[in-house]
Amino acid sequence: MDIDDLLAEVEVDSVPQEKRDLQELTRAWVAERVAPELLPWPESLMDRVLIRIRHQIELVEDQTGNMDPKANFKLIIIQTELERFKFLVRSFLRARINKIHTHPLHILNGHTEHSASALPLLAPSEYQYLMSHQALLSQHYASSFLSQFPASLQKLDDTTGGISMIDKPDEDAAVFCRCLRDVGEILVEGTDIRFEMTRGDVYVVRWSAIRGFVKSGDAELI
Image 1: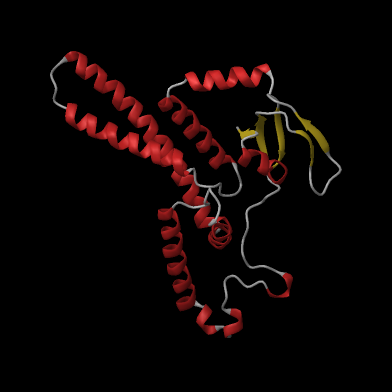
Image 2 (image 1 turned 30 degrees about the horizontal axis):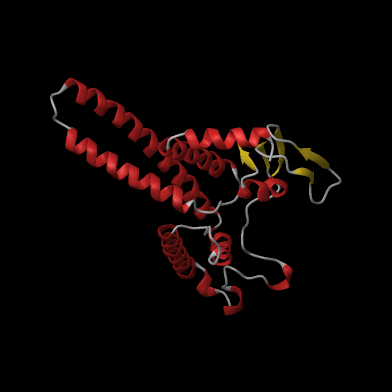
């Protein structure tokens, strides 16, 4: 660990938790909107943010009608901060729901694989929504046309013949990323391209090459 890492840790410790949560939420929002695939659900961060939003809403409701000018000014600041948090949460969830709609079976398989990990792919409410959405979609397809096909051709997740019917996100899509730590040489799979990832540098690279570093916190999407 060099002097820059030590200074960064001191700086982080001196930042209030509320400001750190806002920074983490903003990074998660940007990453979710940029990444081609669904990212793991940031459970602890979202728990803290939702609790803070609930407390601020209760405070605004209690203070509404107070005629003290100082209290009114403080209330305006709280409402402004509350709206900023609510916008980020809503936009973050919309981006995730859009991916659930686009690749439901792929995400369901990924959630099953991540179920035993510390960071699940879906929140419990997202998982329930996905299951309900997929059940309604399967029922609609079956009543519309699938019931007229032979039983062997009615599966929506068929993988026979080496061809999968499960639609997947484009893992080779280009993304912008910023390196947060020196991670050394990176090889872009399927090519002869190699490059050094140095802290502070910005790259345009395939998502498949940078995915692991984004999830580990060594890089961030921008």
